[in-house]
Length: 211
Image 1: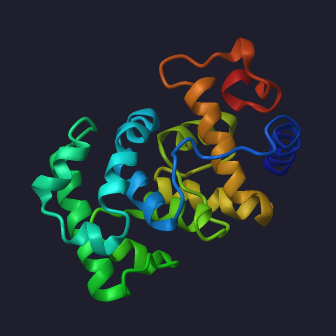
Image 2 (image 1 turned 90 degrees about the vertical axis):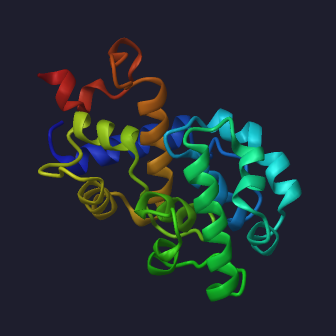
Image 3 (image 1 turned 60 degrees about the vertical axis):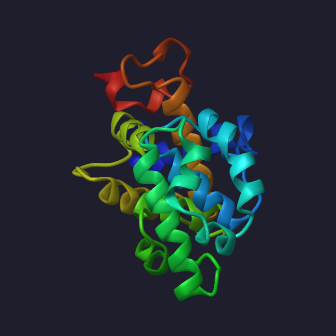
Protein backbone atom coordinates (compact mmCIF):
# COMPACT_ATOMS: atom_id res chain seq x y z
CA UNK A 1 0.00 0.00 0.00
CA UNK A 2 2.24 2.76 -1.29
CA UNK A 3 0.03 5.49 -2.68
CA UNK A 4 -0.64 8.40 -0.39
CA UNK A 5 -4.37 8.35 -1.09
CA UNK A 6 -4.44 4.73 0.10
CA UNK A 7 -2.51 5.66 3.22
CA UNK A 8 -4.98 8.48 3.97
CA UNK A 9 -7.96 6.14 3.55
CA UNK A 10 -6.33 3.56 5.82
CA UNK A 11 -5.72 6.20 8.51
CA UNK A 12 -9.25 7.61 8.31
CA UNK A 13 -10.85 4.16 8.39
CA UNK A 14 -8.72 2.96 11.30
CA UNK A 15 -9.10 6.01 13.51
CA UNK A 16 -12.79 6.53 12.75
CA UNK A 17 -13.29 3.02 14.10
CA UNK A 18 -10.96 3.26 17.09
CA UNK A 19 -10.83 6.98 17.99
CA UNK A 20 -13.93 8.58 16.43
CA UNK A 21 -14.41 11.18 19.17
CA UNK A 22 -10.83 12.28 19.62
CA UNK A 23 -10.48 15.60 21.46
CA UNK A 24 -7.78 18.03 22.45
CA UNK A 25 -6.05 17.24 25.72
CA UNK A 26 -6.16 20.95 26.57
CA UNK A 27 -9.10 22.06 28.71
CA UNK A 28 -11.06 25.06 27.42
CA UNK A 29 -14.60 26.38 27.19
CA UNK A 30 -14.33 29.20 24.63
CA UNK A 31 -12.23 30.50 21.78
CA UNK A 32 -10.50 32.86 24.21
CA UNK A 33 -9.62 30.04 26.60
CA UNK A 34 -8.38 27.84 23.75
CA UNK A 35 -6.20 30.66 22.41
CA UNK A 36 -4.62 31.28 25.81
CA UNK A 37 -4.14 27.57 26.54
CA UNK A 38 -2.55 26.95 23.16
CA UNK A 39 -0.18 29.87 23.58
CA UNK A 40 0.85 28.46 26.97
CA UNK A 41 1.28 24.96 25.52
CA UNK A 42 4.15 25.94 23.23
CA UNK A 43 7.09 23.72 24.27
CA UNK A 44 5.13 22.71 27.36
CA UNK A 45 2.92 19.74 28.20
CA UNK A 46 -0.86 19.96 28.02
CA UNK A 47 -0.96 18.46 31.50
CA UNK A 48 1.04 21.33 32.93
CA UNK A 49 -1.05 23.92 31.08
CA UNK A 50 -4.25 22.38 32.41
CA UNK A 51 -2.87 22.79 35.93
CA UNK A 52 -2.45 26.56 35.62
CA UNK A 53 -5.35 27.66 33.42
CA UNK A 54 -8.28 27.20 35.86
CA UNK A 55 -6.95 29.86 38.22
CA UNK A 56 -5.85 32.06 35.33
CA UNK A 57 -9.30 31.96 33.71
CA UNK A 58 -11.02 32.55 37.03
CA UNK A 59 -8.94 35.68 37.57
CA UNK A 60 -9.19 36.85 33.94
CA UNK A 61 -12.37 35.40 32.41
CA UNK A 62 -12.34 37.64 29.33
CA UNK A 63 -9.80 39.32 27.05
CA UNK A 64 -10.82 42.64 28.58
CA UNK A 65 -10.00 41.40 32.06
CA UNK A 66 -6.67 39.99 30.92
CA UNK A 67 -5.81 43.22 29.14
CA UNK A 68 -5.99 45.05 32.46
CA UNK A 69 -3.47 42.74 34.13
CA UNK A 70 0.22 43.53 34.27
CA UNK A 71 2.77 41.06 32.97
CA UNK A 72 3.88 40.52 36.56
CA UNK A 73 0.34 39.65 37.63
CA UNK A 74 -0.08 37.18 34.76
CA UNK A 75 3.29 35.65 35.59
CA UNK A 76 2.14 34.67 39.07
CA UNK A 77 -0.42 32.31 37.47
CA UNK A 78 1.80 30.79 34.78
CA UNK A 79 5.26 30.70 36.36
CA UNK A 80 5.36 26.88 36.27
CA UNK A 81 5.01 26.63 32.46
CA UNK A 82 7.97 26.83 30.08
CA UNK A 83 9.24 30.32 29.19
CA UNK A 84 6.81 32.02 31.57
CA UNK A 85 8.21 35.53 31.20
CA UNK A 86 7.87 35.70 27.44
CA UNK A 87 4.45 34.03 27.58
CA UNK A 88 3.22 36.53 30.16
CA UNK A 89 4.34 39.35 27.87
CA UNK A 90 2.64 37.75 24.87
CA UNK A 91 -0.62 37.14 26.75
CA UNK A 92 -0.71 40.73 27.95
CA UNK A 93 -0.02 42.17 24.49
CA UNK A 94 -2.44 39.71 22.84
CA UNK A 95 -5.28 40.67 25.16
CA UNK A 96 -4.65 44.38 24.64
CA UNK A 97 -4.80 43.95 20.85
CA UNK A 98 -7.98 41.89 21.07
CA UNK A 99 -9.64 44.71 22.99
CA UNK A 100 -8.20 47.54 20.90
CA UNK A 101 -8.63 46.07 17.42
CA UNK A 102 -11.11 43.18 17.63
CA UNK A 103 -13.71 44.45 20.13
CA UNK A 104 -12.55 41.85 22.63
CA UNK A 105 -13.43 38.95 20.34
CA UNK A 106 -11.04 36.28 19.08
CA UNK A 107 -10.86 36.61 15.28
CA UNK A 108 -11.82 33.62 13.18
CA UNK A 109 -9.30 34.12 10.38
CA UNK A 110 -5.66 33.18 9.93
CA UNK A 111 -4.82 36.79 9.09
CA UNK A 112 -6.49 38.14 12.21
CA UNK A 113 -5.08 35.53 14.56
CA UNK A 114 -1.48 35.77 13.35
CA UNK A 115 -1.54 39.52 13.89
CA UNK A 116 -1.83 38.84 17.61
CA UNK A 117 1.46 38.91 19.57
CA UNK A 118 2.73 35.43 20.33
CA UNK A 119 0.38 33.72 17.87
CA UNK A 120 2.01 31.82 15.03
CA UNK A 121 0.47 29.73 12.32
CA UNK A 122 0.25 26.55 14.41
CA UNK A 123 -1.57 28.26 17.27
CA UNK A 124 -3.88 30.03 14.82
CA UNK A 125 -4.73 26.73 13.15
CA UNK A 126 -5.62 25.17 16.51
CA UNK A 127 -8.08 27.99 17.19
CA UNK A 128 -9.52 27.89 13.67
CA UNK A 129 -10.00 24.12 13.81
CA UNK A 130 -11.38 23.65 17.29
CA UNK A 131 -13.01 26.96 18.19
CA UNK A 132 -14.38 27.82 14.75
CA UNK A 133 -14.80 24.39 13.17
CA UNK A 134 -12.67 25.13 10.13
CA UNK A 135 -10.76 22.51 8.14
CA UNK A 136 -7.40 23.56 9.58
CA UNK A 137 -4.34 21.40 10.23
CA UNK A 138 -2.04 22.57 13.02
CA UNK A 139 1.41 21.05 12.53
CA UNK A 140 3.47 20.58 15.67
CA UNK A 141 6.57 18.43 16.08
CA UNK A 142 4.47 15.26 16.48
CA UNK A 143 2.39 15.81 13.35
CA UNK A 144 5.50 16.81 11.40
CA UNK A 145 7.38 13.68 12.47
CA UNK A 146 4.53 11.21 11.92
CA UNK A 147 3.60 12.64 8.53
CA UNK A 148 7.17 12.17 7.31
CA UNK A 149 7.68 8.72 8.83
CA UNK A 150 4.43 7.40 7.34
CA UNK A 151 5.21 8.96 3.98
CA UNK A 152 2.12 11.16 3.91
CA UNK A 153 4.20 14.10 2.67
CA UNK A 154 7.12 14.51 0.28
CA UNK A 155 9.54 17.41 -0.14
CA UNK A 156 7.94 19.15 2.84
CA UNK A 157 10.79 20.65 4.90
CA UNK A 158 8.67 23.12 6.86
CA UNK A 159 5.54 22.83 9.05
CA UNK A 160 3.61 24.99 6.58
CA UNK A 161 4.57 22.70 3.70
CA UNK A 162 3.41 19.67 5.70
CA UNK A 163 0.19 21.49 6.58
CA UNK A 164 -0.62 22.28 2.95
CA UNK A 165 -0.01 18.72 1.77
CA UNK A 166 -2.06 17.16 4.57
CA UNK A 167 -4.97 19.57 4.08
CA UNK A 168 -4.97 18.78 0.38
CA UNK A 169 -5.08 15.02 0.99
CA UNK A 170 -7.43 14.43 3.90
CA UNK A 171 -11.17 14.71 3.24
CA UNK A 172 -12.28 18.14 4.41
CA UNK A 173 -14.51 16.73 7.14
CA UNK A 174 -11.56 14.81 8.60
CA UNK A 175 -8.81 17.45 8.46
CA UNK A 176 -9.04 18.71 12.05
CA UNK A 177 -9.62 15.20 13.42
CA UNK A 178 -6.56 14.01 11.52
CA UNK A 179 -4.50 16.59 13.40
CA UNK A 180 -5.45 14.95 16.69
CA UNK A 181 -4.98 11.45 15.31
CA UNK A 182 -1.46 12.20 14.09
CA UNK A 183 -0.54 14.28 17.14
CA UNK A 184 -1.61 11.66 19.67
CA UNK A 185 -0.04 8.90 17.60
CA UNK A 186 3.25 10.81 17.70
CA UNK A 187 2.91 11.64 21.38
CA UNK A 188 2.29 8.09 22.58
CA UNK A 189 3.36 5.57 19.90
CA UNK A 190 5.50 7.09 17.14
CA UNK A 191 7.65 8.96 19.63
CA UNK A 192 10.70 11.01 18.76
CA UNK A 193 13.45 8.97 20.41
CA UNK A 194 12.11 5.52 19.57
CA UNK A 195 9.00 4.60 17.66
CA UNK A 196 7.02 1.82 19.35
CA UNK A 197 6.47 -0.08 16.13
CA UNK A 198 5.55 -3.25 17.99
CA UNK A 199 2.30 -1.63 19.14
CA UNK A 200 1.67 0.55 16.08
CA UNK A 201 -1.42 -0.20 13.98
CA UNK A 202 -0.04 1.73 11.00
CA UNK A 203 3.08 -0.28 10.13
CA UNK A 204 1.47 -1.63 6.94
CA UNK A 205 1.43 1.87 5.47
CA UNK A 206 4.58 3.26 7.11
CA UNK A 207 7.49 4.14 4.85
CA UNK A 208 9.92 4.24 7.77
CA UNK A 209 8.90 0.78 8.98
CA UNK A 210 9.10 -0.67 5.49
CA UNK A 211 12.71 0.45 4.95
